[in-house]
Image 1 (tube, rainbow, N blue to C red):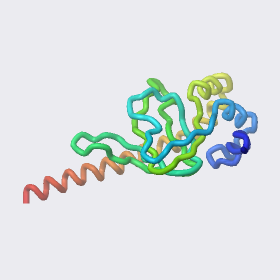
Image 2 (cartoon, rainbow, N blue to C red):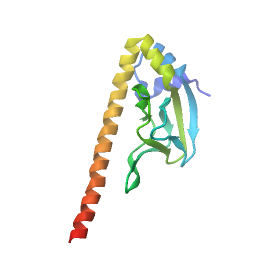
Image 3 (tube, rainbow, N blue to C red):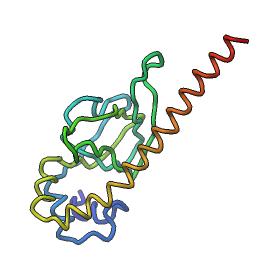
Image 4 (cartoon, rainbow, N blue to C red):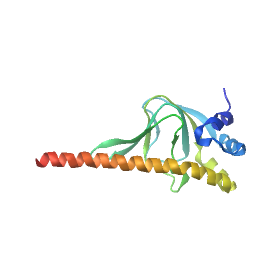
Length: 161
């Protein structure tokens, strides 16, 4: 089996990162798998990790009153799942459900935060790699909310006609 440092060094998310920081990350990581339908985490739970998807797809969902679970975004290989571990109160703001078999690298949040505190340059690099993930999730949430409220507006328009 390939070691985690070599695996991480090849991932687009970590491409070009200083090898000593890849070693930092590998020291906080392990391989995990989730079967189809299994939850990686639930909204409101403590955000104690983040994941890099190696294989499979994950649906990020939120519960919308009157609609039930709504998929905000489906992500796949080479995508990062989770940024709630980075900022207090360290609680997930979405559910994450494996749509199919998922193989991922899981990073322990407290370990990564500690390394960010020890080496602010590493922390800055991690933050700059995670900000696009945060922006992407906010954009997907915005589009999904427009879609949900569009459906509601359409129902009202239909009811009134």
